[in-house]
Image 1 (cartoon, rainbow, N blue to C red):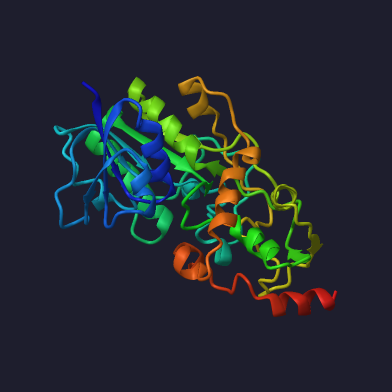
Image 2 (spheres, helix red, strand yellow):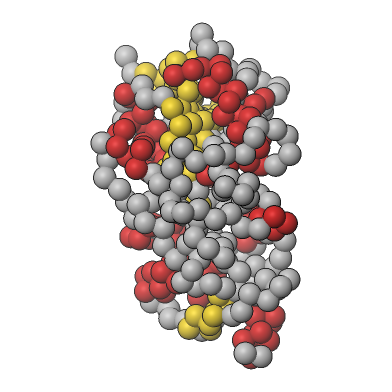
Length: 327
């Protein structure tokens, strides 16, 4: 009999999880509401409101939206064979204690190279996204021991994303922008992670009953300039990248990947555990870019709600033109 898997969440990671597990697992998708992609995917949907509905049981539970200890503490170790929880690479801190969450006030973290799982993390606690993620990780390990698998991705891309960073370039190209201001186009390398890799590695770990904590990352983290060039070539629309200075307080040219120094993570531990070769951002991101072009929404704020949390206007073309004209 096929083993059962319960997938929590309905975003881009859940979509790829359903696709990856569809061959020989009985899949149940648990989410607040049915996603748009549900009709084309082979799974049973169950409405699920955390804190009100009973947590699911299955041979494997994959929680794509576990943000704090309370999100995993309800799972019964006697009714769940393995818990796979999605964490984040934002949990890492550098030797000075600097983190992504607090970069605006404490300075951007600096690492000697790609970050491995041995790198120090923030302490658990209620204060930030990352401290809550660590608290979730620790609760999962305490409850499930070696039957807990923690995955730490970085800037995720894929189909059905609610936070499609690529749209920052795609929309500009579709809107006919031929000059695009960019901060640190070559220096900015913010680690990318393919949602499909998260799912396929999770599948291998579920099959082989592999526990532990693993970074999930493309083998090479592209620069913002690399990403722009890939998207321009794929769409057949060319635009000049105009490097703008990092003026204090200005957000002109700040992309969703913009960082003052590289933030890269090493995903080799997960690949080695599963016997998989590394993958790269391009051409793997082409499907996501093509999907964005096809779905180019009239109301991007409603379509991509996680992009609305940026504390500046992502598409302030008038301000961009003024800044470039002043160079």
